[in-house]
Image 1 (cartoon, rainbow, N blue to C red):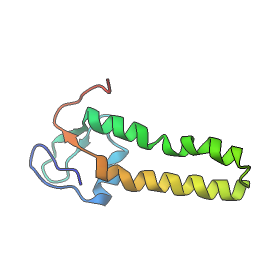
Image 2: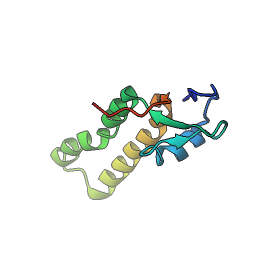
Image 3: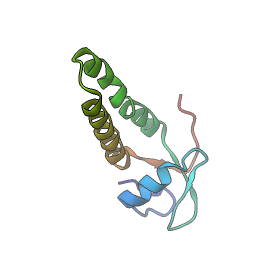
Amino acid sequence: MPVCQNCGSQWTWSESIKKSFQFYNGAKCQYCGEKQFQTQKTMRKVSLITMIPLLMLPFVVGFEVPIGIALIIFVAAEFLCLLLFPRVLELSNEEHPLW
């Protein structure tokens, strides 16, 4: 789980998910109020993780998977991405560009 670089508090899984939608301009730590940003390493990992459903697309089309099953597969893949996000999240006090 991510740890605030300012106060050293460990964020919970649910806090990490809630804050994931706020990271564009930084997310405030619930414990100390300081803005925290994703590290470059985290941004790269998250970019790769979000590609999982897209990488599955050629297999779904190639094996002619019915639409209903394909939707279930994609929803499950998105849920997997959501579950993985807090595990790869690392925080920084400073905002860094992706590259």
